[in-house]
Image 1 (cartoon, rainbow, N blue to C red):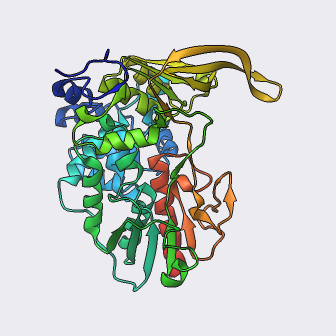
Image 2: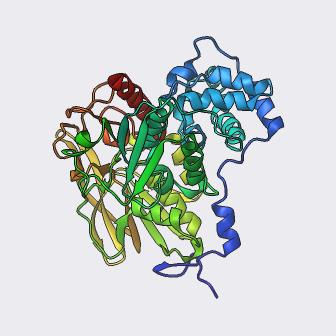
Length: 435
């Protein structure tokens, strides 16, 4: 007989396989042809549309929706992919509720925007069942190194291949995709989509991926610019921020999400009866919701500031609440005391955030830290800004012939769509430099 949500401690098999399959099914079902036609008909096809301005990759949203409305989803997908080659994943994970859909005229007038994200998924899924829509450019004889096969690196590599350059991607992990493969909640991208998208992207040709090679471990910025005509760094933020909290079952939320994403059998994953996630961003919500879906009895997000300061969008907060996750704000962890987590209430003092002296205890046989990630020591020799690689508007770093983009670079939001835009734009600047 299996376990249940009431089983003490960290335990696997809290739910039956059927329940787990239902819990981790697609968060948003894809639109069928009729639903897409109805949804696209709500678009005003605005001139100088605010949704386009709100999109980090500047997709011509009114155009692709009109193309769907006229029965040509493949053309719509081409419009999307010309700006965002990872448009399929972004349609699934992009926080459209705070970007294009928040800017939608329908949202302002009626409180219900055009379903841009779901329409984008409808178009891109249609195209990804067909041959790759882009051809590789005439070979230039130039070779570029891309470090990191995450969204920024993949977008950069694809655009460079379109220009006719040869690209070698160095990836530390055994699979490509970066955050898309290892760092996003399973219910947002089901059915192995992350790998299918990479396979589809690589159909353009001219891109080689070498696995198990990380920057700083036999791959240095002293030799790469000598061996290649240009270098792009899309290494992400590999290290977890440190927090003075230790215990047997105090672990990283990032590692928990990655383990879940790679698990062949969800019932084999252990999860606590009482889980606490420390943090207030998207990673905290993803970890908390998935802990609940795995069968935890109680899951609490503990955040040190007010709920209005949480990095997770109101939509994500509501999603967590709808799954039974409790959000506790204005508290910070102090120490683990057996299977209890001691927290102290906080307030904004004259010198910043401070404890009030009043404490509380939460049952916690598993605690996940989700307080952010940081750049590791691999960026030695580069100028940093705010703990990230300093880049200019074109993505150029302080080292000649080296560009950077995505989460590891300064200036942008830590979002898949932003990483794609920065990788794409860096590729354009690299091409101009090589030309």
